[in-house]
Amino acid sequence: MKLLVATSRTQGARENDFNDCVEGELIWIAPSCTEGGTSPDSACGCGRSFGGLSSHEGTTTALVADLPGFTYSDYADALRSSLADQDLPPEAADEVAMGLLAFTSGWEVGTVLERRCDWFAERLVPVPPG
Image 1 (tube, rainbow, N blue to C red):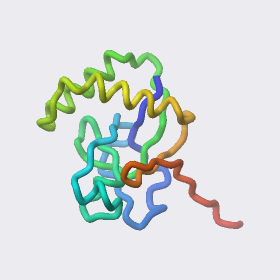
Image 2: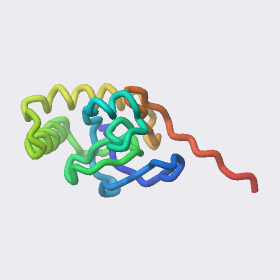
Image 3: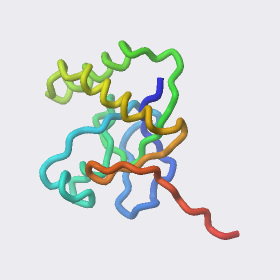
Image 4: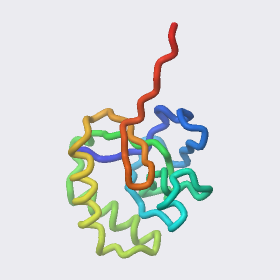
């Protein structure tokens, strides 16, 4: 199953990058606040970050990972628990899971993604000449 996980890969490519998640932690595309939804470079950072399902922290880089043996039920349960812990409606877990699975289906495993409000792109970091 292809899912998003936190990664430190490509961190620092943008000056305002951050990664307060646990490496490899399941993450989701959390809703942005008003300021973060209009400016990915806002102080809050929510318009440029993904949210950790366990830590409830953020990261500006997401890795598309294949987690063999991880089932849809496992994923929905993880989302349900995370939403409940954040005082968000746990009954939204199935809808969120389906949306995230549809989102990740369009990306290759191993791709590092960045978020700019509602725009997502592969994080490409040029290799210095050498």
